[in-house]
Every structure is written in C-alpha cells, then in structure tokens.
Image 1: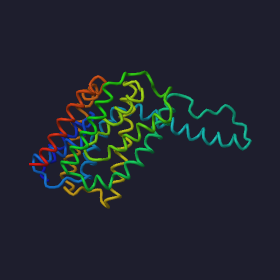
Image 2: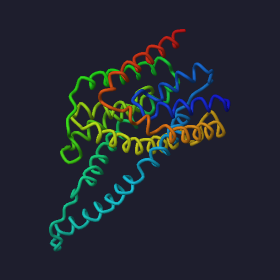
Image 3: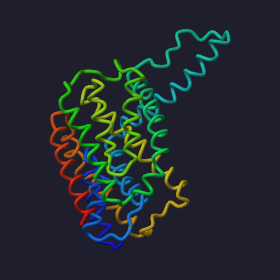
Image 4: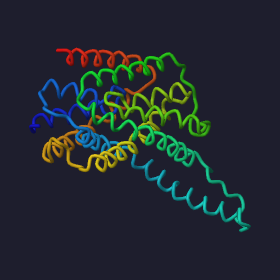
Length: 283
C-alpha cells in the first residue's frame, strides 16, 4: 500500500466513521477502486483508532464522569456484599443515579457485543476485502435503517431503560463485526426500535463505539498474532494520523447528521453502496 492510498483510506474513515453507513464497507470499495492489493482487518482497526481519538476528545468530560461512577459502583458493590454478611452498611444503592445506570447498560451491551463479535471475527478475517461480502453487509445495514425509519421516536433514556434494551443494542452491535455492517447503524437503529430518545441514543452509541473500537483492536492483534497490518507500519501510521486529524475537524458536523429522521436517507445510501460493491465484484 502506498502513502497516497493510505491517506485516501484515512479520509474515507474520517468521513464515514461517525455515520451509520458502514465505514469498513466504504473503505473496501474505495480500496478496490484505487488499486490496494490486500486489505486486512488490522488496517481497518488502526484507521478506526483515529475515530477513537476524535470521540475521546469530544466526550472526555462524560468519559471522566462515567469512569468515576464505575469506581463508585465497584465500591458500593463491596459494601453491598459486606451488608449481606452482617456489616452495618445501610442504604447502599449501586445504581443510584443516571450515570451509573448508563455504565450498567453499557457493560451489558459490551458483553453481548464482545461475545457475538468474537465469534464473527474469524469469518470477517476471511471475507475482509471481499466486495460481495461487503455488499451484503451494507444491505443488511440498509434493511435495519429502513425499518427504524418507520418507528416513532420515544423518550426512553437510561432512567427508563431495562437490561433487555442493552442486550438488544449490544447484540446488534456485535453483528457489525462482519465486513460492511455499520456498528453505528446497528446500534442506533436497534436503539430507535427499542424506543430510545435519539439524543440519548446518539451519546450511548458513540460511547459504546469507543469501547468496541478498543476491544476490536486488542482482539484482532492477539488473534492474528501481530498489531502491525499487512500493509506495513508506515501506511498504517499515516492512515491513522489522517483519520484522527480529519475526524477531529469534522466530527461535530457529522454527528449532527445522526438523527432518526435521516435514517431513511442513510438506508438509501447503503443500498447504493451495497449494489456498487456487488457490481464491482462481478466486473
């Protein structure tokens, strides 16, 4: 992979990383058009680390609060156990505020994402770069976005959410480990269908995305036996830097586009991209 090709793919990741249109699918299509010889899963994970940098910079106040509440939850769990053995620690409420409920739901979603994603990973490694599989993944994303576009938006937030809601979002997020399926698209659309408020859901999806990007990078590194992509260290580093810088610059604009009323438009885009991928496969 040349430096120019790495820059182009970094730009594609930055533009598509915050939207429910399958960044991996778009990168696969563009890599085929610009003549990339071999696209591997670790290179996609490295590009997503650029998106991770932008998300961390944008959400660091919330991330700090959630980390603090996680520590408090662990402490209260210990106190709860002590109470059950006769110690006088009364009125211990582990889920005492909305931030703690957010963390609790996030943990449940992440568990199911990791279970499903880990089982799909081997298939994804084989199919990475395959235009037919990419097209199928984009069409799956389009279907879910299309269905969610007809759902009425409700006002459910962390306060009203149940564990089953987190399981649904986490499970759908897990299936996005397959090439071409959008992790933002799956989590956002399934959240809309579960009755979540889109403002809360957007925040939840992006925080969950931070967790899954880290998990995917670590898992793929150990699973493949190397954290250096097949393309080489230099192209990976350049792609990461381009993705990180451009993602940081355009993030706020891109995030404003993630709304329930836009899911139908995103579905149309995914259909067009999926069909294009399949046509390129046949040519």
